Structure formats: C-alpha cells, structure tokens
Length: 349
Image (cartoon, rainbow, N blue to C red):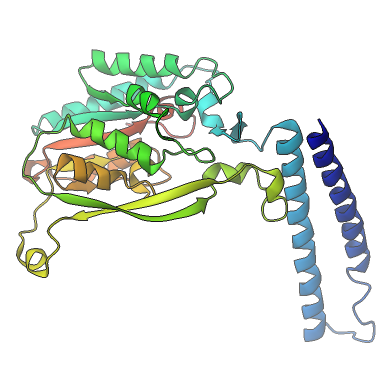
C-alpha cells in the first residue's frame, strides 16, 4: 500500500509543478516580445520558436503524467491496449467482439478461394495460424469474452471443413512457454525464440525440394520497447511508472555456402516455397523467415508486408504472379487468428 501511496504522491506533486509551469509559460507567451519592434523580425521569430518548444515539452510532460497515472494507479492505458498482470500488455484487437455479423465466414471463404486458385496450378496452400497472445498467456491476461479458444476453434474447424491445410501453432507455443518466453510482454508479436519454435514446427510439413543448408547466429541483445508502449506514452519523463521494457535478442540466418565463388556461379532460381503474411514474417526482429530456411533446409521467398494485415499481401501475390510459369510449389500463408475477426483488416473480393 505504501508503494502506491508513494507513486500517487509523486505523480500529484509532478502534476502541480507542471500546472504551475504551464500557467507561467502561457502568461509569458507574448508579453516578453519587445514592444519597440513594430514589425515581426528574426529575433521575435526565434523568441516565439523558443516559447513554442517549451509548450511542446509541457504538453509531452502532461501526456506522460496522465499515462503514468492511468497505468500506475488504475492499471489502464490508452485505447488500443489491455493491461494484464506483471507488466504484460495485450492488444485490444484480441478483445474485439463485433456487434454485427461476424467477419469469420467471409474471411474463411476468401481463404478457400485462394486455395482453389493455387491448386489449379498444383501449388499447395498451407495456412499458418498464429494464436492470440492473450490465449497463450491467459494467466496474465484479462478474460477474453467470446474470443481466445472459441475463435481459434471456430476458425480451424471452418478451414478444415473446406479442406484447407492448417498449421495451428497454439499447442506448440503454449507447451513451450514454460521453457522460454514465446511472446513479448510489451509487443503484439512473438519473440525470436517463439518464431524459432514455430518455424521448426512448420518445417515438418514442408517437403524437401532441394537441400540447402543455412546457419543462424545470435546478434545483439537490447532493451526493446514494444509497439504497445504507443498506448502507454510515459516516456521520456515517467518511464519509472510505466511497464518494464522487454529484452530482445536478435538473430540472422544466411546460407552456409558463402564463398564468393558459390555466390557468383550458383544459378539464380525462384525458391519453391513462398511465405505470405504480416509483420510476424516481415519484421526482421523476429527472424521468422530465417528460421524457416534453417529448419526446412531450403530457401524461402518472403513476400510478407507490415501494416496491411494478412489479406492484402495475399491479394497482391495472387494478382501479380503468373503461376503457369512459376517455380513455387508451396505457399505458406501466415495469418494471426485475430484478423479473422478484425474490424480494420478483412478479406475483400
């Protein structure tokens, strides 16, 4: 209790200081501009610029103060984040329940249509379902109403009925979390180790079209402020009242054949496996395509994009490729479960 009292006292005192400073700044704003200058000259411009910069600092302080109060005292954040236990943050997208008809059915139909198009060219579609972080770490997350297991089972069941090949990563990630952290605490994405576990699982269902060895090496380990910090903007003045950042260890994967002669004279051909998906695959922080290359022992054509959800990248892939002359044999479509019920990202014809 004393800890919360100290936090409250500190934040209240800080708020008073900011209020006084803001009042003085407003009082100062234009009165200090020299009255002997009747025209707006360079010195006045610099003076106004300095005042404007001060007001921006005050605004950032105020924003940080209220974010600190929301998080430290109320265990809340801005719209977009759901605060869990022990510093765990979750995307509000994982708690969205549509008021009107669910988008699951039309999204399933779109996936089935993609599978049918690819099968005409003897290309196999494998849908990789990434579970919701709030389901994998349900012990730290507020209860998901009408989501979590219910949504995942609804999606997998519907895809199976349409004879779409599904790789559901929930069980593997949930079993592995006791040994290593598979999702970041302050980000919507998995950790590189979570991506590695997923890649090893997926590789078991990929046939070998031509063996090529890849090596993965550990790179840097840094403090990482995940994307969910955007909804708890305590930085830079109130970091001590916000969530503790993650620690991110990055990896890179490269071909084991790295001699200049190999690189120069090896034939360049389109990889037989294409990966289409979201930032889980596109963001190099997780090295998901690299781990896939390592465990499948073959190259992967990564066509994933960030910020567009899973359906737009696939739409572009289908419309921009001449499959009658392609070398692609398998398409891995990485889809986070939450997008089947998303209000912002959904399939269009």
